[in-house]
Length: 361
Image (tube, rainbow, N blue to C red; front, side, top):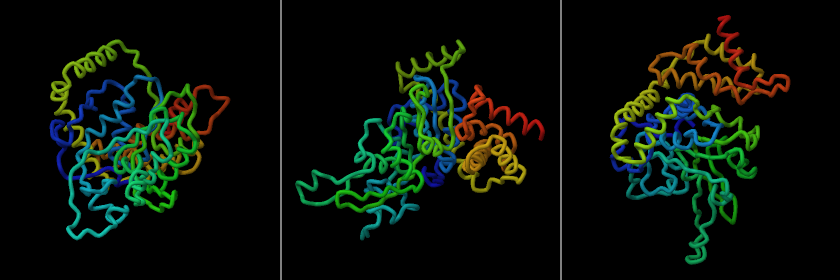
């Protein structure tokens, strides 16, 4: 997963360049929702964190933030005629198209990082891909038609109302998210292609819970709510109205903050490989997970990766206790066993454990 999103040494292109012509609300202009924005940024720095789940009220900027984040990232290099937009340096030979020899060599081009929506009514064929019936009927050729998983490779797969997703689609997503590869065995087709993406889900908890297996696949979980501060709501209205009235002028106004934020992501990716994680930090992560009774080891592994990504994003050389404290809540709140005798919920339990652990330290 560490190679999901393209990483280049180039500076971030301005939104007015050809690869950024889509009119997307700027990420840096989003008001409030600090935890959601931080977790999305960390997933962009290190896709190996495992994606982000955002649960809360409708109309709180969840889908806006996901689409805006993709606009921050630099254009990625892809094989020009590959339907899976493979990385010329990293994916060679791993998809059916790029495995074919090319006498002229593979041409490259720049493409924006994809953000693919997975609608609730999606069929299994649309998700994983299927036989191209038109080509089969007209030309008698058995050819694979890539699905949404192929389009999301090296980008973001966004599922709104993820808690309402049908079980058979959840099973498919679990398999692909674990392996980073989509395997298709159907209708006489036998094919596999890379499908590594950052999974981002959102939903309203009042409409139902996620299956535990899918919940565990999200690295970070965020809870959002409608802001109740008058000044914050007024600023949301002011900025959104300005964007809707004159998108070009609004994008120009926020172009510099967008470039700065994008360059911080790129610098953090470079710094990530040399980031030091002291033994004391590892011990604190393990102690915290033991105190909370999290199932398995995925909790502290995600906690460490998120703390490392945060330290890299902040420009530090090593992970500190403060980094661990800041990401502990989204990394662990969804991995705890439910306590029927504790009505406070997972969030306050994590906060109490943090206070006990770091207070004692």
